[in-house]
Image (tube, rainbow, N blue to C red; front, side, top):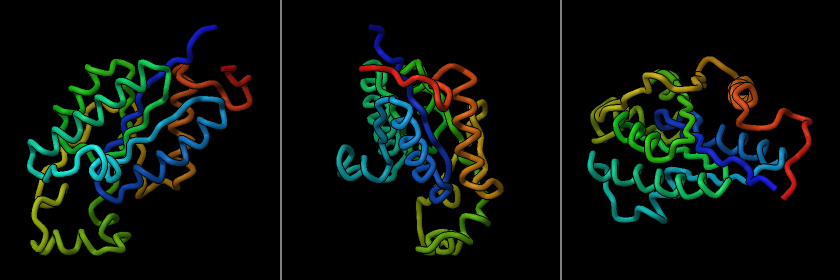
Length: 186
């Protein structure tokens, strides 16, 4: 029996854009379709795999490369690895793309205005006022993808519409079985 095809879905976008929310909804749907799925959430990885790293460019790059390495291991073992981390630097995302191979970048776009409006912790307001240093997208750079396979805009699209756009891409490109198709046995 053929081993299922593993791949990595790399969600990138600013803090609060909806990466983790979409990743969790997507994981649930992919599991429903019979796929093995693991989510590597940026906050969880920082707590467990990258404890002690700060927010300098070097530490951020190290963190994202660690997530990429785990995604590579999962992917080559037939698992759908979903990364939901800000991953602000294009060069490191491209490095992970090269290392992993089966890599699909999902850019969750959202304006600073919308992110500030929905930010319950008030972090954007503080960052915009200069009270928070190294805040990605405000006082620290965020480099949006130039050629993401999938782009959704959580400020303009309903969550369900973004999820459907991601699923449609994955189905059309043969990464996942269509809804209602026979589930892989295993």
